[in-house]
Length: 82
Image 1 (cartoon, helix red, strand yellow):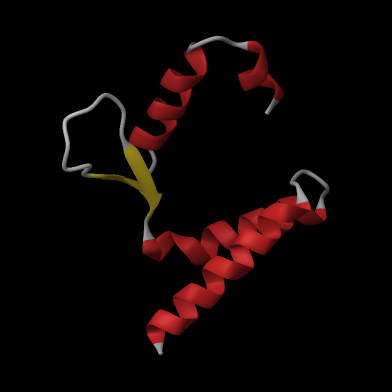
Image 2 (cartoon, helix red, strand yellow):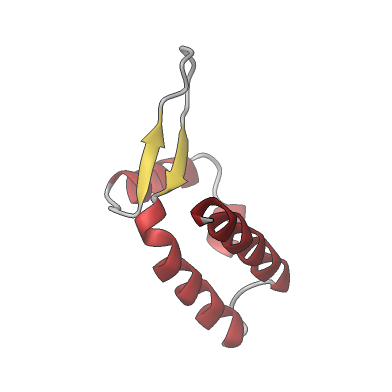
């Protein structure tokens, strides 16, 4: 996003704030002591997130390569379900 390209370090706080206050993501324990952290999309939120991303793509607000990643994620999820 353009906003994050023009700022220096404030974008990290903005992203951290959004992740912390969202019920769609959870922090992943790293197992090592280091600065920073990893976050993941909660499994019960993936279907809703995919719909929103596809809708944004249809409106021209998202890069086509993201759709490929969504389809890969969907295949992986279906394979795990059996």
